[in-house]
Amino acid sequence: VELGGPAKHLGNQGGCEEILICGGGEPFLHPQIMDMISHVKSTNFYCQVTTNFSNSITDERIDKLIELQTNQLIINTSAGTEETYCNTRKVKKSAWEKLVHNLTYASNKKKEVGSVNPEIVTKFILTRTNVHEIGEMIDLAVETGVDVITFKRFLSNSVYNGDNLKITKEQYDTSRLILKNKIREYEFKEIVDFNGMFNFNYISE
Image (spheres, rainbow, N blue to C red):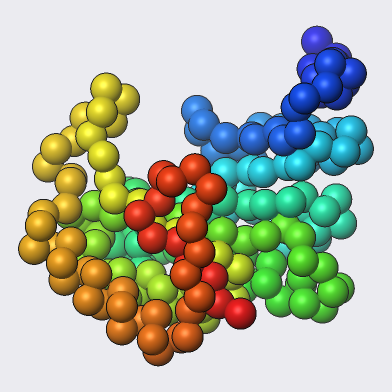
C-alpha cells in the first residue's frame, strides 16, 4: 500500500482536517513513523501524535518533529516521580530519565528555534496508584517546560476493566485541594478541553 495514498484520498474528499496517530501501542516504534508524519504535514493536515515520549524518541527525532511542524504531541505520562512511573509501567529507571530528558529537550529546542510547534501536552490518567502525586505531576510538567497539562480520572469500561484503579472520593477531594494550591502557585489559567474528556486542563501564560 502506498504510504501517501490514504492521506491524499482524505484531502481530495474534503471535510477532513486532522490526522491523529494514536492507539494500539507506541507510534514511534513503527519503522516508518517519521515518514508518516512528514506525509501528513506535506498534505496540510493538522497532525497530532500520542506517545509515551520515552526510549523510542531521540534528540534527532525531536528536531525533525519541530522541523516538520508537527502540531501536537500528547504525552501519556501518568506519574510525578521515577518510583511510581517505573512501578506502574514495569520499566527501568532509564525510561523515566529518557522521558524527562525528552520533555526538557523538546521545550528548550522549540525556544531555541522560535517554534510554537509541536504543542507539548502532558496527559496524566489519575488512578488510585498515582493520584497522590498530582502535585509532583504538575511540578514535572512545569520544570520541563511543557505547554499544556491535562488530567483525566481513570474510568473502567469494556476495554479497561479495573474498578480497583478508580480513585476514591477521599482521594479526589484531596487531589482537588492540591490542584487548587498548585494553580495558585504557578498562576495557571484554566481552559476548557474541546471534547470534555478531561476533568482538568490547565495552561500557563
